[in-house]
Length: 126
Image 1 (cartoon, one colour):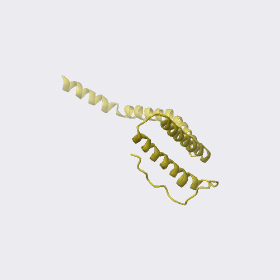
Image 2 (cartoon, one colour; image 1 turned 45 degrees about the vertical axis):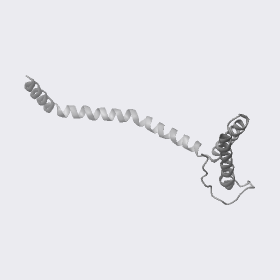
Image 3 (cartoon, one colour; image 1 turned 135 degrees about the vertical axis):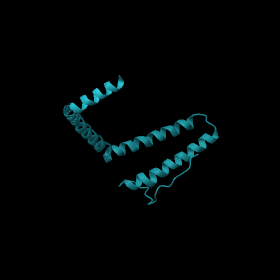
Image 4 (cartoon, rainbow, N blue to C red; image 1 turned 90 degrees about the horizontal axis):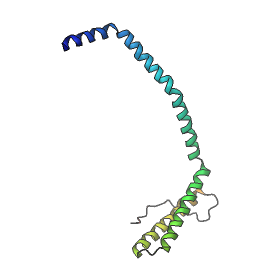
């Protein structure tokens, strides 16, 4: 009984193949038509976001905010009664931050007076 049903189904598919292919193509075209404007809109949004993220003035603010945050954490750790080993690690992290500011941020700034001409080196804070 299964063989007859399978054979009949295969025969129907062969007979209707052209119509099935047209339906599949129509479905593909409909999908493309529905998604293309959304794709373009997403690409435009991504270009806008990237132009904002790569804006030098905005990056400067984020770097400054990050440095302020690290300075705040430093002061917080100094105020909390942590063991000396934690404070030592924080001192090394603070030195790494200061070197970063001096060696990288100042090198990029036209008004920084601490320019050294050095490249930043990796500092182990563990």
